Length: 420
Image: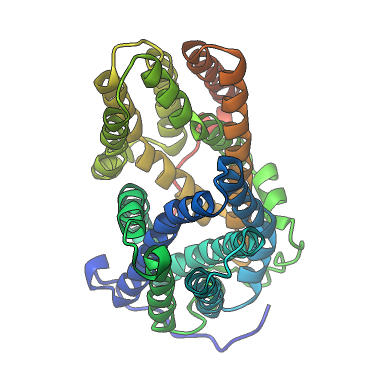
């Protein structure tokens, strides 16, 4: 790891709203996330217009996900070795260039499926690199005692962009000017804002934090690209926690698809289905307000209790009581999600060795990322061979098995919050 001159200790931390470094980072992350969310709608729409094939539109999403998964572990190693600020700037420059190339090809009529698939792979790689480096920057610009509050604000960013992005992307794509290139211009501009805010951060902040965190004489920075996976697997708390998160992520990946099929079978119009899902996912925004309250429980108790609560909710979603029944249950389930996600982030960020933190974060994201395509494919197969209600009950059973296994791990029940 590149050596740097030690910096003087940070003074008493200001509130997050007065922490200009955190606010700059948060604005950049919000801009980038919203741009990606808009693009996630625009790319399938332009591929459908270009080819008329839903399968090829799905292929773009698959290529993008594969790029993100493949780049996950190398991104962690890169973040541990080099300045995270410069990594974010370089990655956002690349994503802005790729998106601008798509805009130019779209306007000039040179856009093709191979070009779009190449863009998808590069954007997936950039997403993995940016996410890992920004997580390290977040840890560097706030004190340990403010980490939970900072991650709670990060949940607002993530969930807010997930709710606003699809509607904004669809509205921008409907603008016929520049051959429907407006949403891609918006996304490219969002990457430029993100790189500009990252450039405002002090250089090598993450390395100064690592030097403060790392004990004297610690040489555990070795271990290569797979060090993060080994740390997660060897840790008695992180291993069952990651298994638990992977089960939830895998089961939840295809939940929307099964709910849509369930509601369609009940004769619910598409507009009401979209409204019901939107109201349900509003729970993930409202749940941010519960993070501080729920974090009064110990982390293992919180994670296992919330995941146990989701089992009957999944089962009740199979009951055909209409869209507002589904929306209410989904809202209740997602109220708990921000607190659970922040719990996992705190455990990983605080318990990982400072000099290997990037690789541990990247390993966790890669493990969770693997569950998403598996969940989509699995739910598709369930719907192919089973009625939608049976498919939902199968998801509840899979969740029960996964949570039940993790609940047998005494280390997880007894887990304590890491000391700052």
